[in-house]
Image (cartoon, rainbow, N blue to C red):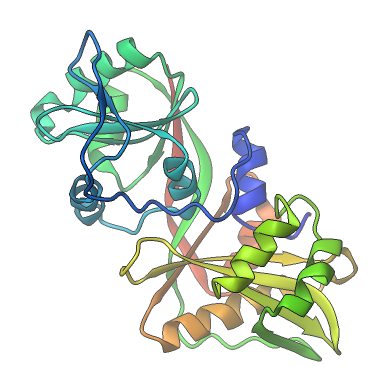
Length: 287
């Protein structure tokens, strides 16, 4: 087991091109630049208005997945005049919102005809998109486990372990134990500067790190990730990191969430030992 969660592992499992960990969708209200299309009414938008995504995100029963936020942040946004939109990342549709549910299936079919994507990533709690994909007869599989509940006040410990905010002096040591979790040392520096990275020491030695990402600005969901150095794997340190960081998030009145690849049984077990419960999936539909 490579003891890392979310960022690097999701990319490899879903065979997505790498994107840096600093992407967060912050769509402004600037003038919209549109590239016309000849069918379905969807047009390419360079600066989409933020209220469209907020409308979609607030309609979901559970918080968005950070992995998808990364793809959306570097994807292409397509919009109709009525406010319906889709976001593509390469040949993958990563978000779709239809203003009129009665038109969701037909618009999705038209959008496919226009764009030619081959895969749709869908949270299982995005019931409108799940239903649309099923009605079009697309093949469904489970790509990941989404954890949106956690047993409260679960206590864990690890002898000699200490978790503190990452400082500039920690960056090089974290990079030296990195194995594809981070894309570059620059990414580590940026995460540390933004207060999203946590250094984990065991008896004074840097043994891993924790990562926290606010999924939506001003929202209460915080995505939790972790990396453990090779010398400390399979000893329970990953469970301690996730549990300790989650407790700190909860103490601030926020909500920790996380996810792992569906076939990664070890990661699933780590998250469950940290108190997380999975009732939802990241689904992959292919036509």
